[in-house]
Structures are given as structure tokens and as C-alpha cells.
Length: 120
Image (cartoon, rainbow, N blue to C red; front, side, top):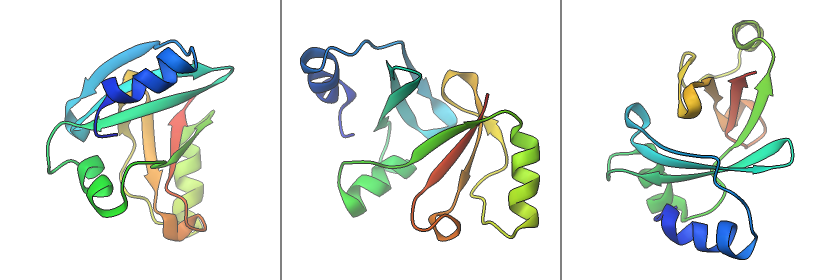
């Protein structure tokens, strides 16, 4: 998103979703807003600077879906399975929005979708 506040006009004001968390993740250079939807959530991201991965993504592909995130019960075990199978990981597990541990899997390993695994 170029602007979380602008996106919230749709998700919060028109769809009636509630923002459960808003924070800046300095290491990722993003502002994040979490909107629960049942047992899932929508995460809106806004770059904090032109060198953010999100800013680069938007410049290249435009606004829209960036990635899909899945919760796993044991992130360390999932990472080891993926590495053993030759999957291309984009980072080692680290803390992100909401303090959750996460890792990204490159789209080349997932059939074209940037996938994020989050520790349950």
C-alpha cells in the first residue's frame, strides 16, 4: 500500500473491519495494520522509505497482494524440512509485526507465490 490510511477507508470504513494492531517494523521498513477476519487477518503494509522491500515491490508491480502467510506450530522444524528439501528461504527466522517469528519462502520454491510462515 502506498498509504495505510487510504486503504483503511475501504477495509475499515466500507467493509467494517476493525484494526487490531498498528505498528512500525523498523527492520523491515514498513508500517503495518492488522485487521482480523474470522480466524485469519488482513495485513496492510506501507513502506517507510524508498529502500523498503515493499516500496520496491510497489514500484515494480503496483499495489496489490504481496504475499500469503500461514501459521505453523513449529517454525524451526518447518524451516529445517524446507531447507532439507532445497526450498529457497529469503531470511532466517526473525521477529516481525506483532512480535511473531517468521520466515519468507521465495516464489521459485512455491509455484510463484511469495509465502510467509509464522510461528503459532
